[in-house]
Image 1 (cartoon, one colour):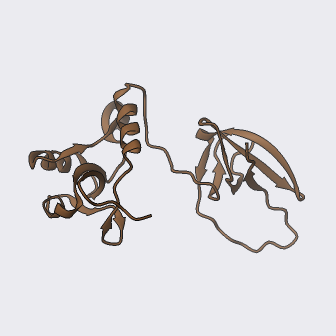
Image 2 (cartoon, rainbow, N blue to C red):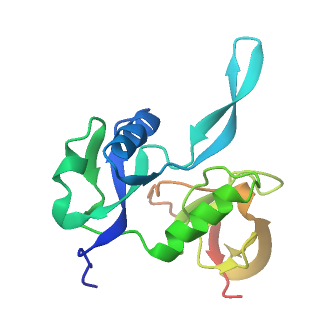
Length: 188
């Protein structure tokens, strides 16, 4: 895949922690179109809680610019880098930016979510299988994950709500004579 870096495209900028809003404002002041999606998060202070606007993508701001003329963007306070491969900026797909903009403008409740990939180690967080770890092999639809539990070299397929699964770092431990439950997704 050869990246297109000609003309104005949307790029993800990595910015300093908690500088997303001010960096987006500074870039807008320089004449750049920015996109800084937020969501309503409940924050607790001592005995009370209130809703605040929090970044949907912490540490990132989207900006529309020509990659060949990126120096003014890079010298903006708060900007650490343009996301890409090495020194080559990779634009965000227009369809992805449009989808995020539609979701944010829809008024529906949104929140950040862990990015899950096929082949990634996951842990079930809720219910009777809480704590069970395994490997995700496929998604079924948009709201559910299909997994199977391998036990005694047999598989049992079950459907788990996506909200009940979180990514984990794989830990390898040699276990002799023990049966380790492994989750493997089933192609739906």
